[in-house]
Amino acid sequence: MIIRRKIRYVLVEASREINLGDKATVDGFQRGLGKVLGDLHYADAGPKVVAQYSDRSFVVRVNRGTEDMVVLAMAFMKEINGQPIGFYTIRTSGTIATLAKLHTRLYS
Figure 1 (cartoon, rainbow, N blue to C red):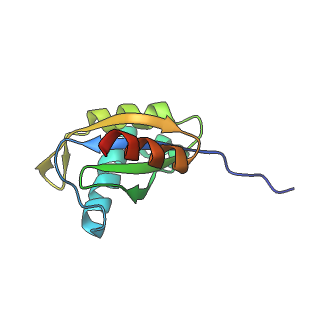
Figure 2: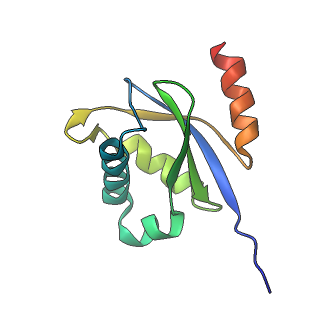
């Protein structure tokens, strides 16, 4: 039996510019998230940055049921690689296309 993975996408905005095309920045983001969540919850959530729409907004993919925990953890993150930064969630959705449309509507 094949079981389909159920995921959620979280549209996040940062307080300053962030380049998630840089591996060191992504690693710092994941390390910070893991530090706040803890190993067990980080493994449950399986967060991954899947898209960056602008220099301050991006999308994180997480397993369904853990999105509230990840949103809260990002609110508690205050730095990446020693640089101060804050994150806040714009919206959570079951599809990335919905978030792309929302971002276009909000920031155009």
